[in-house]
Length: 360
Image (cartoon, rainbow, N blue to C red; front, side, top):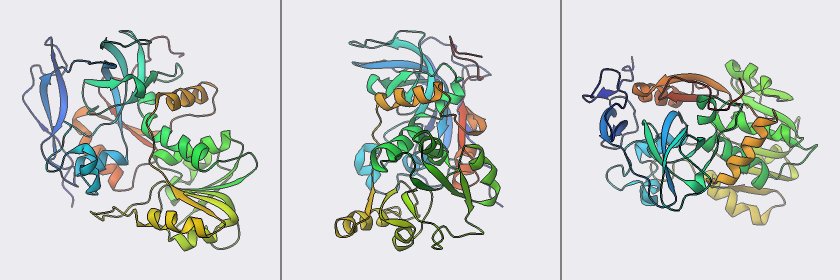
């Protein structure tokens, strides 16, 4: 039986772990890399960070967990350490990347944001009461959403948008297959492909069929029962977000000039982390009529604003499975790693509440 995912808690200055001392804040801390979250994290009191040039200090109300959380906490595959996350030990206090909250202070040169503004975006070390965010990765929160709703959007939503719009080039009337449709990126991709006018087929496991159908998918394939590459249907675009199908099978399900975008699908490989398919796809693409590719998402405020507009017009709604308190980050990561997540997982730093000016 697996040990329960718990977090060691450093001595706090108050019984509730809230930030009552001026200049102090509560944060999740990891001291070393580990592929397993159990026993990895602790809560600690540290000095509240200070916003520098083009930065804002955000009072975090909620954060969220995604696959990138695991990469940062584990330092795997190894190239992520070379990308600036720390060679031997984690460079950042914790692996949180998404947040929603209120601006508490602005740094020199910041315009367009003021203390009290409700914002969401991408940053580092967001499993904390305070985080520093650069303005280029920050946007006003969609008024329709609560803080918890907004916190699950940034990384997964931006990745899905770039997969559908910039790399899949999805057009109205096209047949689109989304593998991993029930995951964090997949739940956004299904809705975005529908918003672009596509006929969408989602692939997921039996227990997640209803969720994918509720997102607007026109067809749902239960991969435990049916094979998307059985030859019965070919697709103009395939977004492989959560699978590990061989490249040959993916190509067999594409139209002769179809487009494949490999967004995810990983193994435990420490060197490449299962990215061998992506490499082979890029190498093969110039020699076939089909367009085969992959990408690394760019974290931009411009795409957050696009997503916000789609949320406001009702085209996009975050699919949230459950919320965890800050002390249970390890449990949230374990749930994700076990493949049980059905939609997004929230880390609630403050009790969820409507943002200032939001619609009820």
